Image (tube, rainbow, N blue to C red; front, side, top):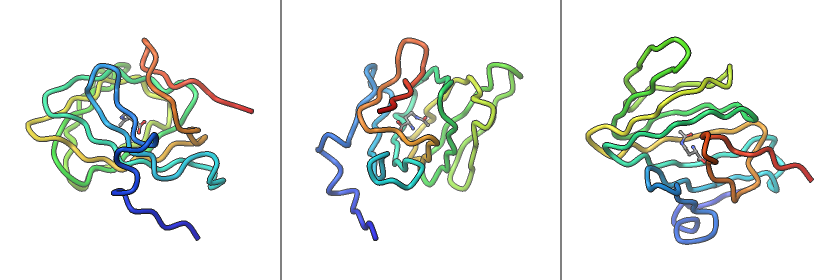
Length: 131
Ligand code: 9YT
């Protein structure tokens, strides 16, 4: 069994910061844990905008605190995000993620799992890291 406290992730190399400061990702389960997915707590800073297009991963996201919006670039639709809302990028959906009036706390699951050090490239993509 694996039991981890976020307090022991913060300040370690499992806490990753967006290059432009929009988000902080605390990676609680990673590829090496051999669960078949990775599991993160992500803080989206209030008032920010992030371009994301996970071409190599599926991601589900559940909001537990704060507020924001997601804009689907294909359909043009925008959805409010707040405590209790989940979205899943089942079609590798390209989108903008907006921080709202307060920092947003999200629980995120990635398949395949991230290995740990990934950060967004210039197109909002995480590379697929395979041994
Ligand atoms: C919601 C989202 O994808 N935010 C960017 C960070 C990502 N969740 C991560 O690496 O934890």
